[in-house]
Structures are given as C-alpha cells and as structure tokens.
Length: 85
Image (tube, rainbow, N blue to C red; front, side):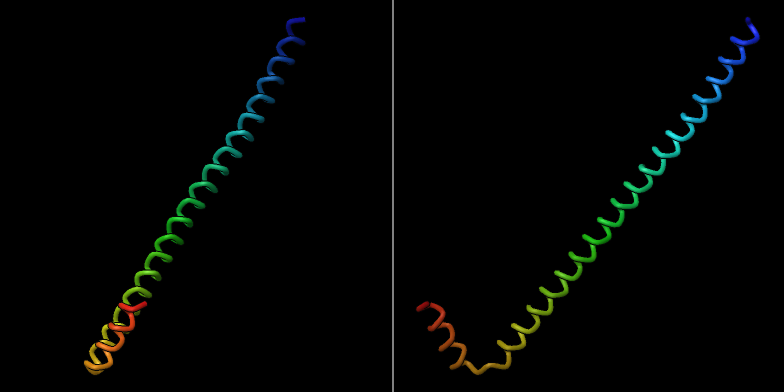
C-alpha cells in the first residue's frame, strides 16, 4: 500500500513541477513581450518628438527667411491686414 501511495505522490510531484515550469515559462515570455513593447513605444515616441521638433525648426527658419527678404512696405501691409482680420 505504501508503495502505491509513494508512486502516486511522486507522480503528482512531477506533474506539479512540469506545470509549474510551463507557467513560469509563459510568465517570463509575457514579461519579456511587455518590456519589449514598452521600449518600442518609448522609441517611437522619441522619434515622433524629434520629427516634430525638426518640423518646427524648419518652419521657424522659413518664416525668418521670408521676413528678412520681404521689403518693409509689404510687411507693413501684411501687418495692417492681419490686425484688421
């Protein structure tokens, strides 16, 4: 009787160890996927911020260039029209 009981308990121990290892492996895989997703999202955000900054700098440069190359009377006319609107 004790031999049968020992065999059943050792079989249960192996099953628990097997399922525990599977659960641990799935848990680690999910943790790695979440971590990689977070890093990818942070990198994407940094790229989008850098692109927005480049666009803003380019727009500022274009406006500054237009202001420097436009004659004074045209600038006054545009300012008057802008103030009326």
